[in-house]
View (spheres, rainbow, N blue to C red):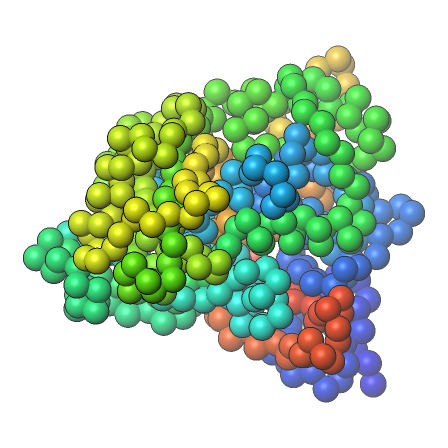
Length: 479
């Protein structure tokens, strides 16, 4: 007997062998996130499948493209640049840390409570995607994703700080692996326990973003996405009809990050300048660091923040930082006083660390985090009536303002994009993000996903088992 994917609440007709355990899927009729590592889309598009134009080729745009392709949509991605590892013009998503973090991120600059709650749900979607990749050896190698301990340190007991206590309790109950609250976590690293008096840790995905985004971009193209290198200017809503006609598409996704200041006409979008020192982490100049170590920024508001962020990369490199500077866009030189001050802060924090031994080919990773006053925004274009007397509602979906959390929120916001695309295609009335029915995920729904993954020898490089996370439409609340 064969069971179709629809028996599990999947979309489409993927045939699932009877021998697969029940834990392969969770029965749900709610919106689903399809992730298929095969070069072909999980659900092949038909002649009548909706065609979506995605603008932006960072992780937010590419995770949305991947999700839509595997859900049976046709996709065209338009961007000024696409990820590669050949030229030196890296995208912001390639420069990122990237340590998966439960929101808010250590770099700070979070201001909207409702947006933060939505981001937490998105983060848990991404967590389980990356955790699966890390647990599957050939996916871990090809996408450069590993699970490692991440420890967060505090200058006063967590139990005495309502904000940090709430976040810690949410993490503890969220379904992440390896959670431990223990002030003695400072001891193995020689960290000053008279200053840092408390800590907790978890097992967190760590992603070599340079490798991962390049691989994801190639996968998206192999699944049938068309790539167009072009820079758009002006408000999207004013040129929506022309773009839909020119590219024979049915809806548009704006995932342009900082570009949304112009394309979405959103003056709340602003750059957060940041940099990380890339230190050689080969056990020769100091004991090799294999655990992520972090101290969150405490300053609030539209001001510069400083934080400790020490994260090992899979290529023998240690990222050390960091800072966030609003509305600064100039590129820093390697010996800039701000870079040197950051290096000294990290060395004072972690005894024995020597940040002077830097990657000679790429010593400092720097870029502009795409931030937004009011935080991340993922909603349909609200303009009504439409310019030029057009009837109906816009079919633009905006998804931007992820700041330093693009990778952490990526697959969760991709699910939201898919839901909003369906809403736009159905001609429904657009609503602000805070009024939208949430796409959500909870510990009970996905914490115990244990998919049978064939070995590379069994399936070859191009034939990789499907990962499907079925997301129930309920909110996980911490009591």
